[in-house]
Length: 174
Image 1 (cartoon, helix red, strand yellow):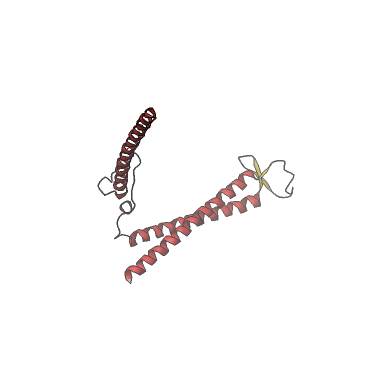
Image 2 (cartoon, rainbow, N blue to C red):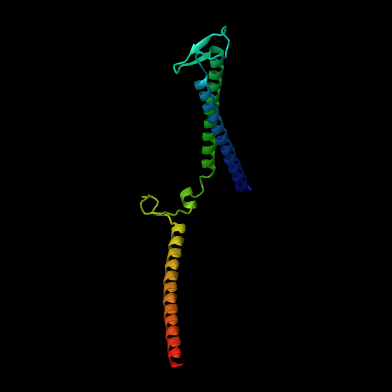
């Protein structure tokens, strides 16, 4: 029962971690949207806006009303603060999941590893690689199968030639 509760807890933590990552991505997109809006703003000479409001000119040539700029800056700072909190939450979830999974095999040993080319140098040469062994066996079987197919093709060609010769002799006889 303790083990099952621990697994459910770890699964719940993983789900929370996934949701946190999604929140981080969403907040990051909002930050970029805010930055884009701040950059675009209103260029000088824009017909929009009221003359009685105080305006500031940013280094990129964009003119902003101080109130609008301050609002967007406050929003941006709030998003950055929330993002920082989400990253701390994700770190806590990550650490707790690692703590709960401490007795399990390391992940590289749980995932079958297939190396496409020999160019990758890996320090994990010791652990068994079931997928690569199985692939090697399949390659050997395929090689033998191709050899047998080649032999059968040669036999069929020889039989075809023999039948042609027999038919030619029968035709000459008649």
